[in-house]
Length: 195
Image (cartoon, rainbow, N blue to C red; front, side, top):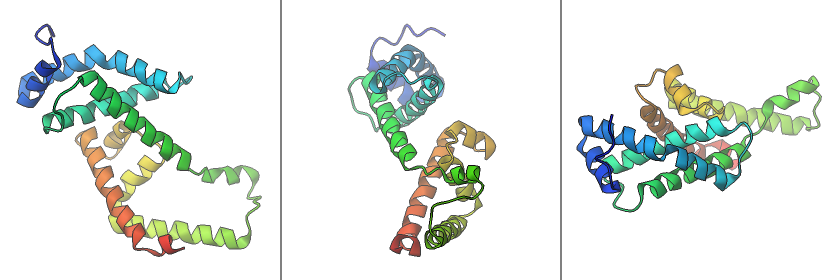
């Protein structure tokens, strides 16, 4: 496939918004043209992390999907597509770092044969919070519960799409977003927030 007809960002935008075959050609050419540059910029942004190259590529791909959705839906007006893509990828990376920082390693206590320094009261409160959260997830429905639990355990959108048989990663991402919004509202109205 020749990408010679794409000299400016406006050429990509025009064909992406057109849909059909021009959309697919523009998306393919745009991805091939800038992907390595975006991965490189993102790695320079965080410093090269050993063993994280594939994770960066996944993040860049997720950012590309979001970018093409924004272009298709008129969520992009002008400016460099390269910088737009990099900005979205940096935003996703910041969100991932925040999410990873909040992740508790619950299973670590299992390594020490249930030896724990927590008081019985603290253990009981933690167990109650887990039960409340499980009840809230159940209220969302099995589909939402599965999506959110997989996402919380670090599964990529591609893995979630495949395992839960979504039609696309975009649909998996939209479902995760809607389910997360519902969960936040439920938590705000629950005993979990008051404790």
